[in-house]
Image 1 (cartoon, one colour):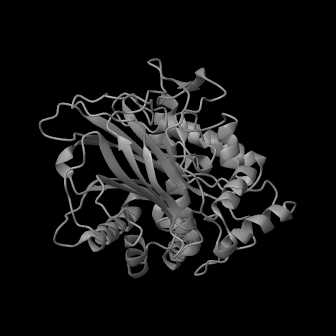
Image 2 (cartoon, rainbow, N blue to C red):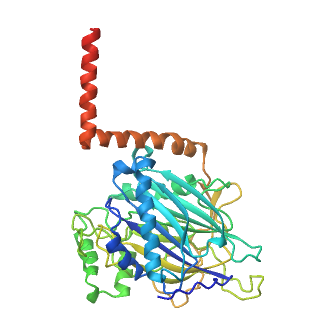
Image 3 (tube, rainbow, N blue to C red):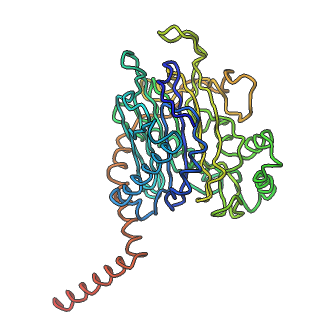
Length: 441
């Protein structure tokens, strides 16, 4: 791979985004580094954003003290991966931001740290009883293309792990969680996930499925399972099955979630659920595209928009959207997106009053290769909504009080019930209670 670190063009910024559910097993560096180094872009990108879900056990995830070492270790593996890909001596990578909640973490790494002028973080749980068993972690970075330029732009990234399971109820629950997390991720600058003049990316194990009832949809499972045979699969056949079965695509088409966002064309097989250590689907679940990367897409085809006088179509260019099919350490396969975005941000989809507004997308979510990637496809719906997009007082109460309480109860409960030291502590406590009772009876 090239180790060239030339300054990116001012009108465009190259990004690499990656999401992986580790299955509570952590990351095996001996396997992860060579596999992931191979899929990194040949030219050095401006920013590398990694989202990790289930980085550790539920018990370790219940406390910052016990989860933080896992994410420090993951960060080192990510840096080692980048150094292996681009050369240890020629390119220096720097982690400019880490944010994690529970077992969910997000990392922003760059070879150009001087271009990052500010980093903000946010996190929110949406698991059972508002715990961090599910939720999202986010980072917002401010990018300044050059020391002489007075222009700066924000980039907002969120990595989420949403509720699991098949069925209408769980699909609706995931849609609600996306909207709630976008609202509740408070970056401390007056805005939540959605912010004017910011590029926005939402990724992670979003857990959207391909069947409502795994026992009834046997034909769907047969069709989806056939995609694991790459010799018999074409881009069109994969895309058609995404259109036919993927509930996230259906939810977006129905304007139920991710209004103003789009996704690159999916032409890779479902990324979940695999038998551990193999590329064979586990038949207990319908093969699904659980792992996704979406971006705000309300860009406009403007030319000559930059002070330099250079022309630009001012829309993102997707270079590659794919899964890492050679990594078998989890029941998920990682997904990555290599994309170039214009310096000029998309048109805001949040009003001054804080409510979401729907605008026509530059690229509709149809998951099919189109002849003109800059084609503007108007949404069927456009205008203001009643969805509030800024953090509320209730969100802050949940974040600072209810989530820590739930995590503490879950963590201590698991410690008591699953560890020898926890059982000994219970036994000692019971003996002390008996002794006190005998003394004072």
